[in-house]
Length: 542
Image (cartoon, rainbow, N blue to C red):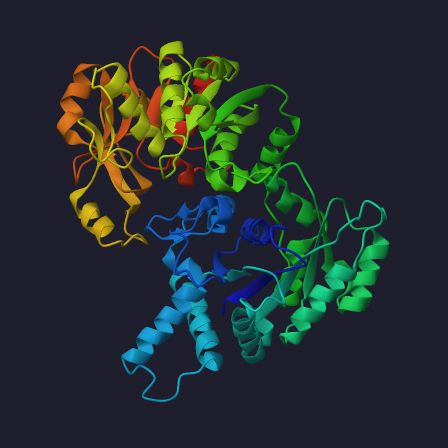
């Protein structure tokens, strides 16, 4: 029988439930177990595809094309496993399935109720993942915080599973212990309150992970033990650290993996985190930096810079930098300041301060002209450039305007009436846009790509046939392909089924490559993505 570990959060959101769950999975996998993970999001949206990345954070995409929460990306990176649509559950998906079943008389004409029918649907989805993956451990992260109305039904499902199979279900609470500046003492009361709220849902945590700026001391662990009804050794410190990849190593310092096995009545096992520990050593000791500028728009929310909008890109840069034992310094460059005609040349000069420039994906016209100017500057000044999705489309637009002489060339996303639509929407996508069908309707998930011989791309991948993940509607317009190639743009990668350009590169440049797909989704800490690896290599040469 598989074992189920539910991870819930207390006090506030954003304290690291996802990386805690991913780290636990990494520890158990290092002990020889097969592990999978599920993210439960309590919003009504069917998936994350229509959400604003500033509000929600990055939209991660799996091989089978589900648009999901960024925590699924953390699971893949830590477990080095591909996850699929079944590994992602939302309130919207659950209610949609129950209502569709009721409409088809799937409940035999009886009254369908929120309890137990919604929790039962949740349970069936969790068990479906366990059956499909044949995992020894299924980690289930419940989004939000305990005490919220939105996740009560998921907690109820977890409670019902524990009631039927108490020896197969474990509960872990990730809770924050603040140190108010005016007091200067770590406070346990918020965690005590979170545990009581979890108790009200009929659940007693087996293990508490104490998130805090520093390690929990013996006094705090004893206090949580007494008031939260757990053993002191089941209160695990989760202090702030420089890199999330250090978390599994920190957890194992307190023997978390074997604590979990003991609670399930399983034989204790040795771990094998040697490669992971080597990675952590590189992260902590790398001194020489590589400086990367990220030109985008999903950075700011009020007075704060929100890095979660591009979390997979950030992690992919880190993976490739650590591969060369370098410390990445990522700087956020707002594209909008490059748009002003009078001051753009002044601001663009700052790009010379970076070893390389990335223009990541995005939607909407804000900042687009600034990004195009930044790309032109990188092309002319021989600054290593990597474009991702929109970053490729705008590289094509810049090349068409300034090299091919196509005045005001553009993407029809930004100028539907442009004379030179070098980037255009596919015919089937036009119908979906006209009918306002936006959710889950882009070119999503894994598609094949055939790489052209004698290209930098081929050297990077060391193979001529690859598969990569997509999330976009607009494509390079094949009508202009020959003209772009004549002027020196290399169509280095082509999707063989639809004859669509997937990768472009330029000759006589230290590094100028861009992909229509999102390579960042496939980068792993111990296996940097080839395009990011070659990009960082070029940056180091600069």
